[in-house]
Image (cartoon, rainbow, N blue to C red):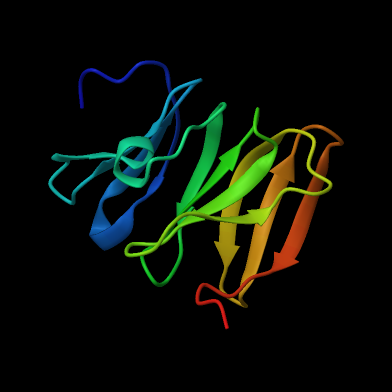
Length: 123
């Protein structure tokens, strides 16, 4: 995986691949054979501040913690990006999906781990 500029975080991507965030750049998706699939910013028309933590939910949607943007955004496969959390975040660096339907965010702004109820499919 050459050509990345400042890879920062690596997490599981959709369909057994990888999601890699670049410091002050974009989030790149790679397939299960490590082939490049493109960037979320270009594919979804989204500008990141400083993408940090990345994870993928059970539906195959990618979730990105944007440290500079102070938000956590869901990138569904077939829909537009959705901001999941923005209020109360200082420096979100890490993000994970818990099996009980929770979204866990590591916020370096106040040194807290924050837990939110999360459903991948909006009602």
